[in-house]
Amino acid sequence: MRNLYRETATLDARSVAQFGLTQALMMEHAAMGMETIIRERFPLNSSVLIVCGAGNNGDDGRILARLLEGDYRISTKHTIHERYDVIVDALFGSGLNRPLDSLTQELLKCLNSADAFRIACDVPSGLYAKGTLDPHTFRADITVTMGALKCSMFSDAAKEAVGEIVVANLGVSRGRYEIPSPWQLLELTDLQLPHRLQTSAHKGSYGHLSVICGEKVGASVIAGSAGLRFGAGLVSLITCENVLIPHELMQSHSLPATTTAIALGMGLGAEFCDQELTKLVNNHHPLVLDADIFYHSMFPNLLKRNNIVLTPHPKEFTQILRLTGIADIDATALQNDRFEYAQRFCAAYPNVVLMLKGANVIIGHNDHFFINPHGTVALAKGGSGDVLSGLIGALLAQGYAPLDAAIQASLAHALAAVKSPKNNYALTPFDLIQSVTTL
Image 1: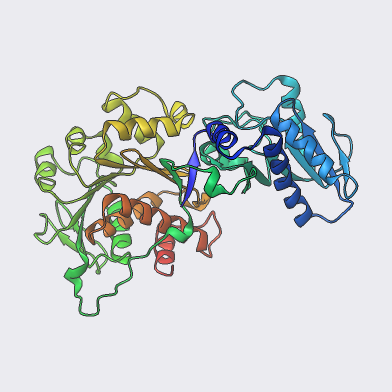
Image 2: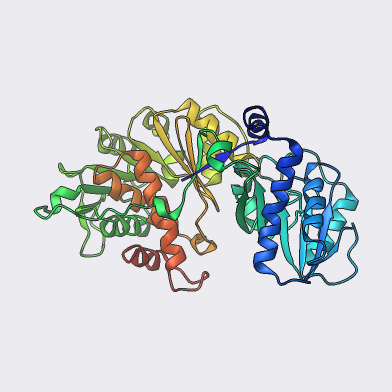
């Protein structure tokens, strides 16, 4: 895991106060970070256009021009009339808080259309602190961000603009520059699969996941199949009447006594009456909740429980925010400020683990937050969320704490999509489950 920050101005000020750094020295190191990238990737005498603004970000660009001058063909100007090997955006940094004027938008449009390798200094110009993008935001192949990683770079929208992300130090090591943060970036090396190490174990040693099977049986079959393949010793679908399901899954009309976790909501519909559902969850088993349950009248009571994981997509999360009285907004407003609304919900419900799905998943619990940036567009298909619920449910059934279950399942879900040999338009939920088995 790596630290993320909503803002880094306080880290800069702390470095000046504690380590004797100056703005000039930090800008020199910022420029050296970009210089390293260019020298590593492009031969001498390559043409480099550096587009500079008026503030510190522009100064970083001007220093970069000095460092490269003589070895590379350098241009610094606001117009582009020729082809360049490299374009460096040093217009605006992470402090941008006002709309871009029309001239800047036109310039960025021109830079984005150029046939060149594009480098953003700190953050791509047009990316705002909340993670929203101007329509003409600079589209970087690589972003050299200064000092530390910013949350804004890991919004859903930012995924279109930041490219590869590299952190440049500003004159002190990251260990000195950074301070503890409530926000963390998940890395694939954080994944810990539920390998079985106990040699004398039996199926009961690995828990029993019960999936409440609603009107759309397929959603529960997907979740149950994912759960079985992610280590749960037993998986049962709880149905109102007999339905056709895969032979490896069990079926019951009541909650098995050996249940150790419950998955509820995926494809639920109106299959169960309120009394039946209440009876099924009238226990202390950990829950993973998704989809239809967020619109059910019993949902507010479920929020009072411990050991609970919610997995809404943005539209479903706006329903949760309305239901809890936190905010009455639409999905667009939510996506424009995902970090803030995730924090507000987790502050109001510190016993709940929230997994806000999206291009970059946010996982929150109380005052700790984690972003999983490793998902791909291959997951943008019906049933992918059911797989995720099954993975979380399997880990809950095996005794994982809800936050750990959410983190590990999310990483496995993302990595399975990355490693699948299928084209990104062709991945199905069962392809995804198969990929999970080979991680």
